[in-house]
Image 1: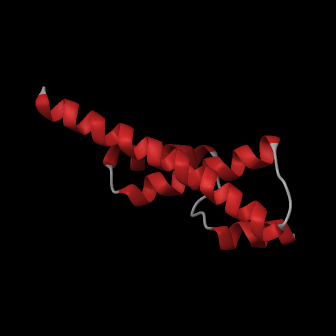
Image 2: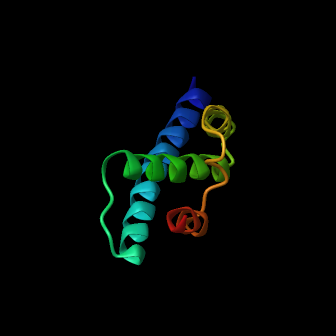
Length: 90
């Protein structure tokens, strides 16, 4: 039971970090491009950044979730701001 609690605590912490990271990436993207994005575009950017964080986390549960999401959303991973900029130029 103690192991489960510890693992759940780690998982929750990583998910919160991923959400925070995704918002930071979206803000940085907007600052660099000097524009505002909202709605579906911002949601897509944040989701991609969050899933990349999951992949990089080393947590098996989050990696599995990111891989599952990547199958449903081909071409979205790997994610980086550099790739996002390249997409915006198209």
